[in-house]
Image 1: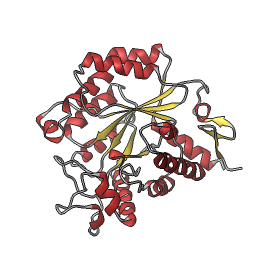
Image 2: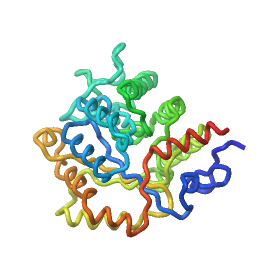
Image 3: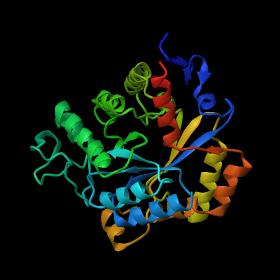
Image 4: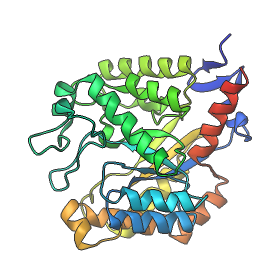
Length: 318
């Protein structure tokens, strides 16, 4: 029997659920609070660094192609509490452009006329050559290692590996890298239950989850993602109330709360029109009421580092 099997929707090891392998009860609610887009800008770096130091987050994901990535990585290298994964990046925005990390030769299938990544998933999925993707993603990981950090996991900026636009995904390439570097990947098992995905998309995710299990790559159960933009007449208080409701709805499993915190600056305003929401997220998870809620509801905060270490210890024991 392989060491990794699936029982229902939960990853198990010889019949024991991942919760218990991590040292918790099967009925415990485990939550990773992850800040995406670390390294995108100094505005995001200041927010995420502060949140790491204040234990307002348990994890973050760095974008290695971005100009502020070196600052982010430098902080992580010198601070043990900063558990950071690689936010694998293949797209950029109209207002903020960045180029591939791989520089040995031009990755023509991944870039536009200005030498930067495309801004939309359709262009990426229809034009990208798989070998170029593997070279670039591996280069992003290698750059992080060369600068002195030890990544905790891999995930996908803008969902660019998931085949969300045309159905052409790149998850098996990511899984090859997960095996090479012994890292878990952010592909929540309950993605197959989301009503906004087509049946073809759900079938694809089921196949990829089965592949991850066979390879011994750990996946979490669920994800709680926050909208990028202000909704209607949303205020900080209404946003806070909505987040409290979401947190209370978290079930016994391993769930990631994904956020994109930043401080409002002219730099941030030039990058995204949704700058107000990003600072709201920063304020929200520094809010004492939110921190107290996790304690009151007996929610256990964990990081990707624990999952990475479990994956490595399980594989080394078989």
